[in-house]
Amino acid sequence: MAKYKCDACGYIYDPAVGDPDNGIAPGTAFEDLPDDWTCPICGVGKDMFVKEE
Image (cartoon, rainbow, N blue to C red):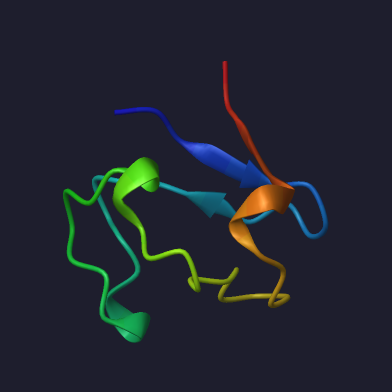
């Protein structure tokens, strides 16, 4: 599963880790995150994330 980087602050969403502080279990693909999920650091939406190559 690909990692995604927040364009606003540089936070990396790693599917292997998830976002447990916000109820996202490890193993959750970026595509499977809820539409209202936001960056846990700066609060921008999923549309501000870019796939890491």
